[in-house]
Image: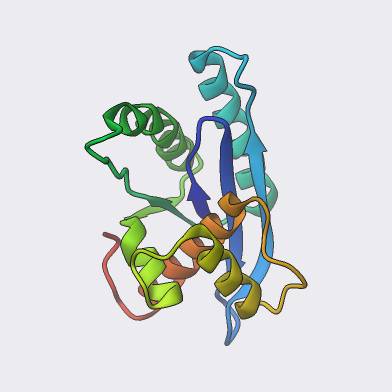
Length: 160
């Protein structure tokens, strides 16, 4: 299971790697209200994510590492709140947890570590012959994270 953290939209993607080729099981988003306080959103995020985990029962969860840009340091701090809740929920559910840098995920999927969201969406669309790119982009990002993790584990790679 790949998870793309967010305080308003968290993407998730469930991929089965038991077959010869990765099989898309589900992809979606957890939407949180901007009108709700941060602590209340974090509680809701955990509750919703645990529901998705309960529904699909993945063995592994993969999450993007926090990225901080010098122009927007507050964004990294805020995203770390959501990411912390996601890590907690995954651990509570007994999942093996893996974390990857965004540029490594994009590189493995598109061949370019600084690929734009649209490129990731089109790559996911092409891989699974979807009629349209996954929307919102958070779904494609989560599927890319799951795909990278599964491929990485299959080849004996590290979780960083």
